[in-house]
Length: 511
Image 1 (tube, one colour):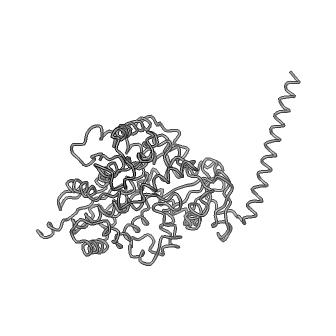
Image 2 (cartoon, one colour):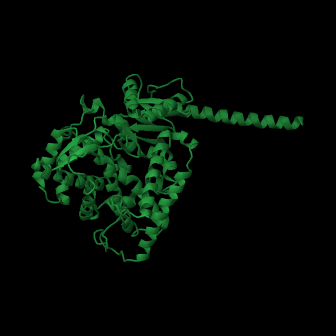
Image 3 (cartoon, rainbow, N blue to C red):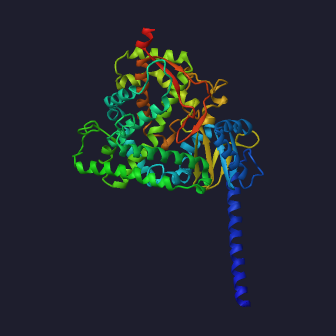
C-alpha cells in the first residue's frame, strides 16, 4: 500500500513539475514576443473582476434594458478606443479604433479565426456554411459565393423586384393612416430573398400564403432570433433550452431539401450557359449552385446561409433609412428630387440605380449612424498583436495571446468624433461628398477577405425599393415621437419600428 502511494505521489509530482515547466516556458515565450513587438497593456475596464462575473452581469443587464449600445459608447468614452476586460475569466479586448479593425480584418487576417466565435450559432442550421468554418473549407465556400455574386447585373432581375414591390404596395394604407413600415419591409425582403435563393417566394405578403410556407417563415424567423440572443449572451446561452430552436432548424432544412430535390429532378442542362440564360424562371441561387455541385448538404447550406444573412441586412437598411428620412424633410426632398431628375416616374434600370450618388450617400449615412452589425469578434489562432491602444499614450501595440478574443465595434467606429467630427451622431449624408470609406473603420459589410460577397446585390435591391417608394410618395411623415431604441438581432433595428404616414402625389393634389 505504501509503495502504491509513493508511486502515485511520484507521478503527481512529475506531472505538476511538467505543467510548471511548460507554463514557465510559455511565460518566457510570451514575454519575449511581447518585448520584441513593443507591446504594452491597454486600459482595463474592471481590473479586479478576475472571473469576469461583474462584466457578464452588467452586459446582460444593459441588453435587457436595451441600453447595450449606450453602454458601449460610455465605455469607449471612458477608457478610450481600445481597452481590455474579462468575461468568465477570459481576457477580451474591445476596440473601435479604425487601425485595429483594419488590422484584424485585413492586414493580420490570417492571425484570426471567425468560426470559434460564431460556429456554435450557425452549425445547427448550416453545419458547413461559410459562417461556421475557417481555413480551406471557408475559402471554398467564399469562392462559390464570389462566383455567384460576380455578375450582379445578370442575377438582379428587376422585373421580379417590381412584381414583389407591387404586392408590397397593396399593403400600404392611404394617406391619413399611420402604420409600421418595418414589418412590411421585412416581409418584402423575405419574399424577394426566398425567390432569389430558392426560386420560389415565401409569399409573406400574400393573403393566400400556404400553411407550409407560413411554418417555414415562422421557423426561420425564430431561428434567427435565438441565434442573435445566444450570440450576445455568450457562454450564458448554454443554460437556456434549445428544444424549439433545434426543432425549427429541422423544419427549415426539410423545407429547403424538398425544393433542392425538385431542382435536381429537373435534370436541366446547365452546360456553359451564362447566369442570365438559366431557362424558365431565370437565375436563382439554388440553380446557380447546382452548376458546381449536386451534393444535398452543400446545396442546403449554401442557400440557407443566404436566407440567414441576406434578409435582415436589407430590410434593416430600408427601415433605418425611412425612419431617418421621416425625421429630415430636407434630406427626403433632396433625395426625391435627385431621383425624379434622373429617372422621372419610369421604372429604374440597372445603370440608373448605379448612378444615384446621393442615394448611396444616404445609405452610407444610415449604415454609419445605425450600423447593421454593431459588434463582431475574432479569436487569435496564434500569438499576435494589434497595432494601437497600448501604453499610457495609447500608441503602442497590444499583445493578443493565442485563443484570446478581439471584439471590434462598428457602433463605436462609425460614431467616432475623432473620425467623423463633432456632428458624428447626426444624420448628414453630405459628409460623404468629401470622405471615403477607406481606413475609417466604416464596415457595414465587413472588410477584407470576409467582406460580404453580396453587398452590391443588397445595395441594388435596397436601391430599387427606395427609388420606387420615392417615385410614388411625395411625403413621408413620422407618427411616433418615441426615440430610436435598440433591438439587437442578427442585424440592428429599432424596437419601436418605423411608424409613419405616406402621402402619394395624387393625394397631395387632392388636398
